[in-house]
Each structure stands twice: as C-alpha cells, then as structure tokens.
Image (tube, rainbow, N blue to C red):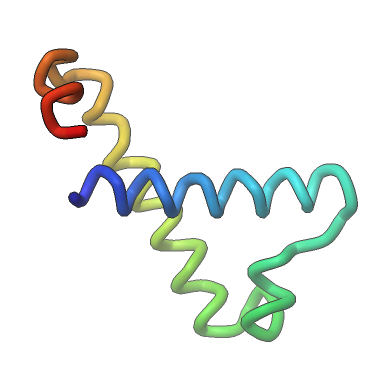
Length: 69
C-alpha cells in the first residue's frame, strides 16, 4: 500500500514538474497559496520522500511486485 501511495505522489509531482517546464505554471503552488506556503512545502516534501522511497522498488523482487498487484 505504501508503494502505491508513493507512486501516486510521484505522479502528482511529475505532472506538476511537466506543467512547470512547459507552461511555467506550478499547480501545487496555485492550489495551496504559493511555493512558500506551508501546505505547498508539505506537498513538495511528501513528493521528495516518495521519490526516495521508490528507490527501494529497484531492489524488490519482480515476482513480489507482481503478486502485490
């Protein structure tokens, strides 16, 4: 379950980075009141922690991952 939450947060972060790179629009900052707003910083931090967590997916057994789905 934690892997799926981390993956969902990474997808949100990836979409946000895509919007920022293509349109110069930070969706997280727009929703939560700016890049320095506490809620925005929490979301950015959660995305970063999720990325670090997902590094562990490279080292998990492939059969274990397919059984969890």
